[in-house]
Image (cartoon, rainbow, N blue to C red):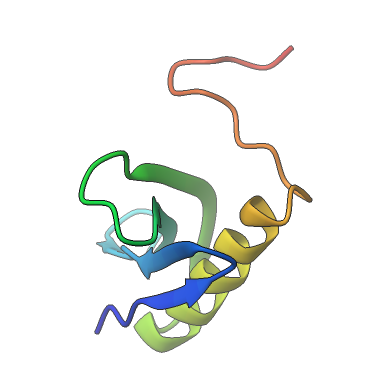
Length: 81
């Protein structure tokens, strides 16, 4: 169901998956610079949603907030400060 959108020069692609525990669809978005084939960022959050469609909507909003600089995802492996 992943439908990519272009937003401010970036391509946002939901990458939600169904989790068993806790049951729900995950929040993960892949962010790539438009017209580039490399350099995709994978951003996730611990949120889960009841349906794939609902998760995809939140993934795209999550991606928009990252592109806008309103959210600063931590680098992979970074723990709490």
